[in-house]
Every structure is written in C-alpha cells, then in structure tokens.
Length: 447
Image (cartoon, rainbow, N blue to C red; front, side, top):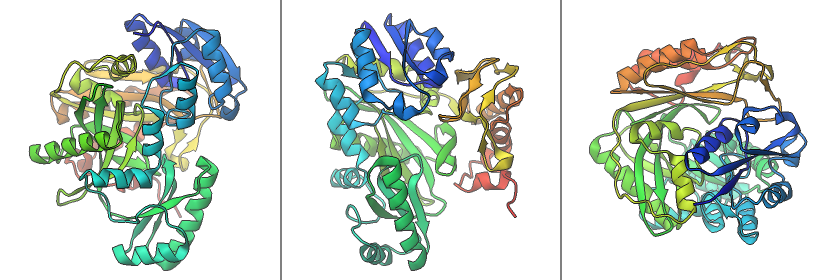
C-alpha cells in the first residue's frame, strides 16, 4: 500500500479521500488554490500545498504544478477525485512517466472511454446494446441529416469528448438539427478542445440507469449494482438512488452482465461507471463509460458496505479485489445540495455561509466540506453537500431523506435542499414514476 498520496482536487471529494487515507494509515497531501486556502480539506490533510491562483486553469488543472507538488512532498500516488483532471489521459500518462501512480484507470482506458463515439463502437462489438446512431463522428451537416432521417427524429447531438451535459443538443427537425450540430461543435471545442460530435436517437422519457463496477489489475471485474439517476437538471444529476425501483431481478442481472462486458471491452481497471438508458418496455442501451469515481458513489457504499475510495486505493496499489460477488441490501437515496437558487434559474450563490446545520440521525450521512464562516468561491462547482439516506426499504429511505433535507440550512445562502425535499415527497417519486422532465413541475413557470 502507498505511504503518501497527493489529492489533486478540492471540496467534499478531497475531504472524502483524506478520510479514506486516514483509515488506511496513508499520509494525505492536499493541494489548494489561493481561493481555497482556508478550506476544510487543507486543514484535515496531513500536509497542504498551494498550487496557484483561484482560476482552475492555473491551479487544479495545471499539470506541472500538481506534478511538482507531488515530487516535492514525495507522494507515491495521486488521486484525481472527480472532475478537473480525473478523466485526462494526458495527466495519467505524465503521472506514469514520472513514476507516480495514478489512482484510476490506465491512460489508454481513459482515452478510449473519453472518446464516446469510439467507446460506443467498442462495447457494441462486445455485444452490449447501444442507442441507434452514427458510426463515429459526423463529418458535415449533410451526413448528420442523412443519419437523422435514417434513425428518425428526435435525435441527440453529443460531443464525442463531452461530459456533464456540455456539447449536447436535441433536434426535432432538419432546421434544429443544423443549429444543434453547430452549437454542440462550438461548445465542445470550447469545453474540451475537441469539436467532434456524433448523433444518437433521442429516447424520450427514458430512465437514466448506471452500473457501478470495480475491476482490479488481475482480470477480475464485478458489478456492485445499479443506480437510478433520472432526476436531472440541464443533463446534470440531482437525485440518485439504488436499487432502481422498476428493475426486475432478470433485467438487473442483464444490466450487470452488460456493464461487466463493457468494462472488459475497454480493458478497464479501478472504479468506473457504465451508463445506460432504460426504455419503458425494459430495453436498455449503453450511452457512455465514466472512468472515475462518481459523485453519487455513496449510495452504492450504503447498500454494499464497501468503501469505494479505499477500494480504489487498494486496486491502484496492485491488490486483487478478494471477492467475486457483493449482495446489496436495503435502499439508499442521495440528494445533491448546490449553492444555487432554484427560484432564479439555478443562479449560483457564491459568498459566505452563515450559521449552518447539517442533518444527522439514523440512516443519514452527509458528505460535505462546508462549515459556518466558510466562503463558497465563485470559481468552481457550486456543490455544497450530498445528503444520503439509507433505509430497510425505499419508503424508509424516502422518509429519512426528506426529513434530513428539511433540517439542512445554510444561513444567508440559497440552496437546492428544499427543491430535492419536494421532489422526493411527491407522488410521482414515491411511486417510482420517474422521467427526466419530472423536475420541471417543481420549478417556477417561465413567462
């Protein structure tokens, strides 16, 4: 096992990794920008190093600064968390060249999973169902139009190097298709440095279900069950749960086996997530592979009893999984609480947190980095906390989560806790009738 690990991230995921390191007896080294000098992760880590100005491109995304910090503090490995450089094959390659272990998949697997059109073709060859669409990148508007007519409108234009909802547009006819391709290309180029886009059939009201996998470096790959992630805003998840309320045991088994095949198809190791769309008749389709720990990993931890971050560390250190099957029990639901105003088009709310109260009680877990007096920077993602509830069944998990969200308060700062509470209390959520548009009914009507 490693002795010293540098954490190339911030916020709640940096705190989460520090705690996992502590349990394994590993010294943790935090990095921070000028804006994060007094953040929680800098005080919890064994050591802390400033790596640059507030702008992420000059700090958390600046590879030379991160490598220099790792070498100065004699770190044997780097954990990238999620976001920032977690899915950068360039960063993983440089770590390898500097003889620093990258706690995640190989650079080759990251590059393949990040090229979404190529990854889609690879898993399709392995027998995993994929959404009908283009065979790779579309080269011009005429090709896009031809493919759209073949598979039928509506279609989804997606950035090949995309993620987080960026570089994604829906088109319902030829006119909107031309605009969608142009806009997605520009957005993808700006966000990822790669303007390539491909086209998929847009499956209306399909559920978003993903499967958590673990794969070691000795050829073992297992599924840890699925997560329901249909409740989203702007293609970003807001509420996640496990297990999915509408899966039969047969369909659950098919999804798990497809996820394992997808992981093997790209020679994957470490923790990863295989994302699927689930149709109303039980048909499912692969959409992408996330080569990192997910924001919503705690719900899987709650029903499996595993610590996925510690499993990441063990796998990166070359240890085998040591088990071939995990049986989840109970039900868990997570709500993401953002420093955003749902009543004002989710406007980010930077500034100082006044008095705050974090919920607790039976079956409640809160992953966060905030505290009274903490200043939420305007430079980064606005996630304040993840409130996770576990119950013996779904009804108990819902009751616990809704109560916990009622308790969550951040004086002087709007957040999404009450929006999430209203959603999980709704008849639609309780009945399991989830659609991507469900959140719209809880938002102010635009004029």
